[in-house]
Length: 336
Image (cartoon, rainbow, N blue to C red):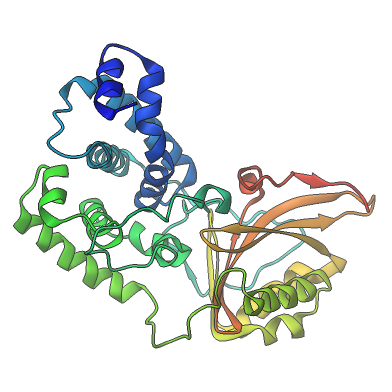
């Protein structure tokens, strides 16, 4: 059915027609909200608010821009509202019984960060980007990129994502934000400079292996073997010298192979052993971690996401077990 007919039906109150109009854009809008907010749950809320606003204001859609651009305008402004209204979540206290962590290298700023399930990225990041996009889709959904966005001022985040990630023209972005092209260009210049300071330089590390390649599979297999057998030496051999570990919603962050090794040794202490179930988050290898108990039941304790560089791991991010259901992972596994 032609878009004009669907719009006419939706304006007349036909919810099914509205659903047909918006369904092709839902996945990419959800990823857009996630990039801006850094939280999977907040992105879900922002997407629902976007659809509600679009449904209520469809009568004002004049077709001067495409429906996709109009939806991005609404979604961006709903995310800006959420960023301005949010009292960012407080950090969670250390909650691993029987484990005393090393002194953290520093305390992280972005404790509200959440992972994005790989299954929901299918078809969402292969959208047609504008000619001015500067980032590859995989890089622009990575945990490092999304984390770096969260410390930028809200309007700078919006401008950078719309211009450099999605490739909208400056005039389009100015229209979305009720701003001017000069203001958009100025915000983009500041955002690029801030992001460059926070993201690791491409020269610092070789690129990660291709997704699903034998090289990626080899690193993942070595990591799983080292972790499940609590072999700290084998694990350390996989890490870069400057490996970085974070664990939102806890603020502890560790930088460097030695301190990350001490942290992992503490987790494996007192005979604690784990089983890992593979997944993907933010386009990166991920694992549900399950602690083996004396009765044979294995309890989900968190999700680990790896950032790879060449044939090494340059970052590990640990999320708590509340995120496991988003990845289709159970809270516990039966005894083997």
